[in-house]
Image (tube, rainbow, N blue to C red):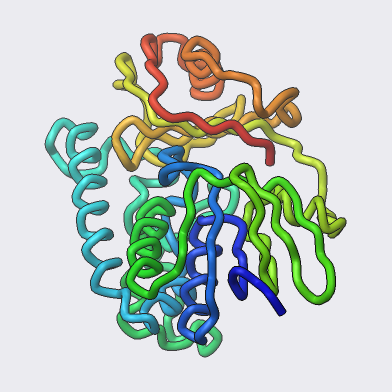
Length: 294
């Protein structure tokens, strides 16, 4: 069969890059197509689970993860000290704490590390991987990108998959920069996957009921914001644990248009409404922003 590569992976996020590396270890010729020219700076996943850390540990990546986490935690602690006026006693913490000493959350409800029964057999013994959590999605992408390069994976950034045509046991993948023929095409291109839509795969689920905004901002007038996750009568907000990071969650239904531009004034109004303080955050300059429904 005449193919340019064995496998095309659509999507150069953590899943796509990890899969590409694994396929390459098995001897496959792999090309990753990612529509973005660089790693997306927009806030996404801020931490990883223990099973994820275990998988990366098995591939020799634990030292790099540990170093990333060390730098991240140092930034967290510096931010918290600044909010506490240098006391470091956590007085600025909201109901969710400062984002340290937790093992995860569900809808902003934090699970404290000291409440986890590590003797529970179902948790297993993760070994050194259990110490890794605070590694952001962007850092995972960078680490896996370097690993893919070392393994000889062909990663093409700034190339968008626009469609594909299967035929005769292979597939011709159409892209913004021409076509590539492969034995297999794998869709790792997110919740609104082009590959999934063109293949006709169903994506069952429930309609969103909340409107959420997550942003990194330059902000003044935030002295009364609590650090961590805080529930109010009008929603939920999070401040920190990295400098400038805010989250707002409103329960009045999904966003009318999740792709519409968001202004500083809009984000400022939402934070004031959810935090319950009209004096808060009187000056916001949006650096990175993401709107979504939940």
